[in-house]
Image (cartoon, rainbow, N blue to C red; front, side, top):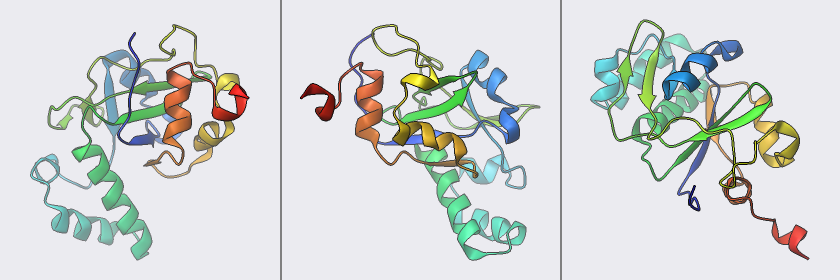
Length: 168
């Protein structure tokens, strides 16, 4: 596998209790919920209407804003971005294709360019004990998705590179 570059890096929880992790990984999909939002509104990027719907679901404005922004990240993400999740004691990563969001009987989803990967570019498994703390801590994130705070650390991990501190 060739060297990977990342424009943006995001974490996603694949369903409450990782209930969609198996199907997401096996089918090469990034599954997401927001069941109260019609797929047609998501595909049309009707963010004002989406925000209003979410405001009816949430008690506080912060949750409405966060959910709207994370859904927008999922919908507008390109193959230049990297998405990660955790499952079965591994970090998994992938890039979203340019295809519009879809929906099946399980959830809404976006397809990945070439599926989910659980190895670095040298073929070494990305087991949790190899993942830097700044990335591993995302497992405790309670909401659906977020930006990765240190995308450089993540890029070094998947490219099997040492950090500047390790090089000294």
